[in-house]
Length: 138
Image (cartoon, helix red, strand yellow):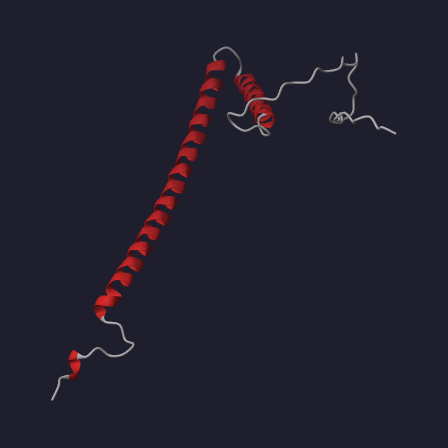
């Protein structure tokens, strides 16, 4: 009699055939999990850096108030620092608004000559300038 264990079963892969795809799937899953964990770690580190920066800004603000309080009453020193921070915030907002349409490293477009401004500024909201319209032929 012949031993039937020597013959491969039809349609069923052997353990050696399954080892490579399973090992590849496990390696890819481990890599994906490590990338995901490192991404979460980076987010936590950026959050911690932001919190530390916020506290550092608060400490600097307190330092400025105490420095001005040497020459002014406490409330006036706090008001001066408040005004300084408000000016810095406005300056940063304007700088961000001006650079929003430009890409970093892109050359700036040449500015068009401006028309002479009116002697008095209007008190209401100012409409943005309109592009010139080509003349109609006809």
